[in-house]
Length: 107
Picture 1 (cartoon, rainbow, N blue to C red):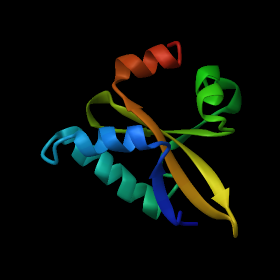
Picture 2: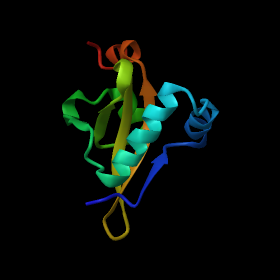
Picture 3: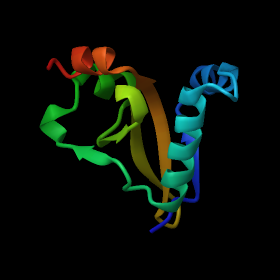
Picture 4: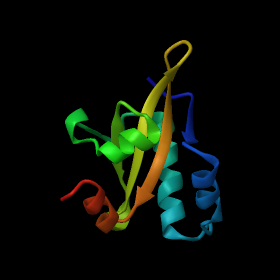
């Protein structure tokens, strides 16, 4: 099942994405990830519910979390939602380097 769209969870995150230069490898990686999610919303790996950080649940009110691995040990976090006729929407929550990722997941 293909998502109808991929959205940023809020305008601030989208603004941060747009502020990254188009030649920046991170921007290229995020753009490719977004395209991949448009083709396959399940392209990342699902985090077991009990392992979803409580601060993520509290901040975004989500019930599922997916991690998409980016080059150079960066990670993109996203959640899947349904709207209307069970159309899947992938909502990008954040992206972070591996150090921030380890801190968030307490590795």
